[in-house]
Each structure stands twice: as C-alpha cells, then as structure tokens.
Length: 121
Image (cartoon, rainbow, N blue to C red; front, side):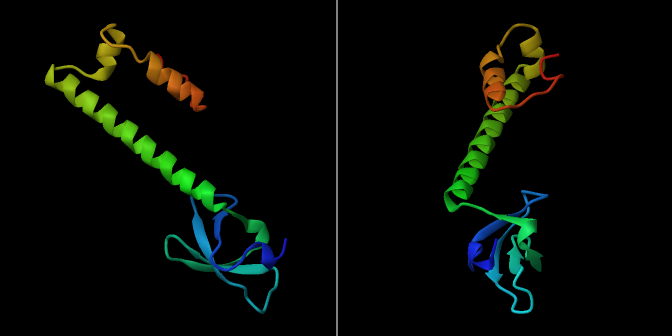
C-alpha cells in the first residue's frame, strides 16, 4: 500500500474498531508510510496504512441506510409495546401466551445473521 491508495478526503475506518471512522486530511512528509486522519469524533492522528482500511463511498451510504432502517424497526417495536401497555401487558407476555406471533420478526433476524440462544426462550 502507498499514500496514493489513501487520497486526501477519502474515508477510512480503524481495522480494530470499524465504528471508528475518519477522513484522510493529509500525507505527512516525514513518514511516507503514514496518513493524517481526522476522526469523526474530532481527534487528529497520524496512522500507518496497516491500521486503517479505505471505506468505499457507496458502502458508507449503504451503512447509513441500514442504520436508518434498524432505527425505524426499533421505533415500530416501541410503538407495539406502547399498544400492549395500554392493555396492561407487554410484547413478551403476548408472545408466550400465544396472542401474537414473532415468527416473521425472528425469521428476519435469522436472515440478518442475528443469533441469540435466549431470544426464543
């Protein structure tokens, strides 16, 4: 890898913590093996090419859309819980009493790779 692989203004993420993202702001003259990054949390640092990976712009846009969809799903579950509370119960009780089915939700979570041994207990 070289600094040409990380042009100024390209987006990168930390190899160890993919939630830590930033923008390349320069190429230090003193070390051609490093890039200067402004992280999304406001920190500035010089990092080795080995510490980061370039984020494809369309991939980052997709990540944002995925996150928005998950927030919408959470809002809908909160609304369903509020309706259950109006009846003096909760979603968990309604599911285990057989009043409602979580089959489609569980299937969607399974399709997304989610797994939890206690989710269906």
